[in-house]
Length: 159
Image 1 (cartoon, helix red, strand yellow):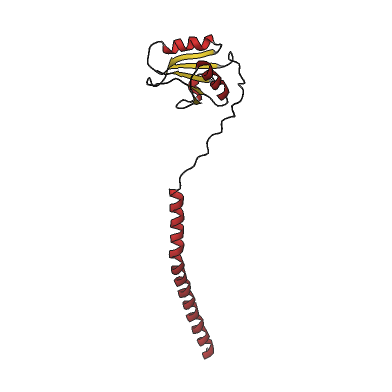
Image 2 (tube, helix red, strand yellow; image 1 turned 90 degrees about the vertical axis):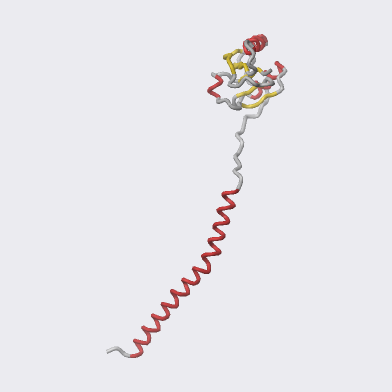
């Protein structure tokens, strides 16, 4: 036979357990909304934050490491006039450069000539541009290094 104090203790413990579960549930509901809002705001900030890509580092341009004869040039016709690339290749060859190849650019609406270079050959490109009085020099834009056919720099002949 059970004693009345044991029954009262079990009932009190059960009531305390129910109260504890209720308090934990209420606390979770009260904390869940602010925490969910903070998580949502943080996710929105991250999703809307601008993506900043680190620019590729090009080697510093100093003095050219290749001589004119060692510098291979791809000459491309970017103005659409027949023979423009061949004429430019003759001028480039006359000042001592090696012609890697002569061909047509993807576009024929280039208004100005430009020199592009593969990584590590900025100094050679600037020297070629200076020799030809070309004012626009930049890294490969719209071309992959493989499209240079082994050349160090590309001259796109404009109008």
